[in-house]
Length: 300
Image 1 (tube, rainbow, N blue to C red):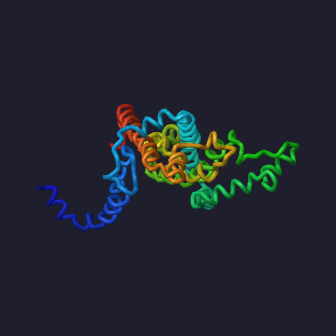
Image 2: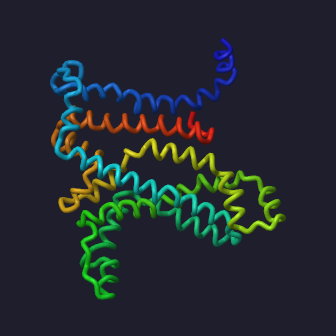
Image 3: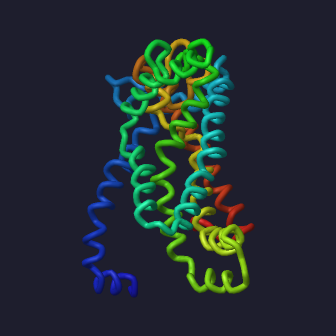
């Protein structure tokens, strides 16, 4: 009863929240109705309810497929490499920007590193093709200038992962640093003043004041990142994929697209996608529980 009274007293806030709730219900929760095709032999003519129930047949087929382990390896490799090299970078950038005293130079640097975030994935991959072209790319021109042979970066399977990870770091580091800069703004300046009075250097102030101050934010974002470790971006991987680098670029999202859209195996692709989502949920819950026990900071 008290809940309804509070809702009635603050009904304006709930009205503001209503559009977001409707969007999530329509575009996030209602489509979950179609997940059941992962357990059926979906036939468009019969519809979802009329299609034959096959249980876990599609999941077993995926687990027993010849390329299951290669797809898992490719997906996990991209995710882990992006996490290991990409996650710490915004923290370093935010800490360095926070120590800058020249405001104009600081704003200039922030603008420069934020800009790549607003470049679309299609344009980003196009830039990679231009810069890394074996004939006209500036990178291969520099390699040839120093006596080397042109490298087929975009076609070499060994270069797919480094290019994917490094381009992601370049594009997202600046924008991701905004969260840490906001957290650093909340650090009590009196702590820095006290540290300066005690003779602490900038490095020690960063280590003992700034990092502990933003540690809860780091933990929350790390939990979210680990919970999405199987969710590799489809767009960039698909645009960078070719027949020559297929061995390392074939990940779960591109495999789902290939099976579901190109081969019209809707039930099978839905099963693969559902498997991917379940793994993410399990990882999110497990990592959140571990973080709560070790640091008392968690999502819930």
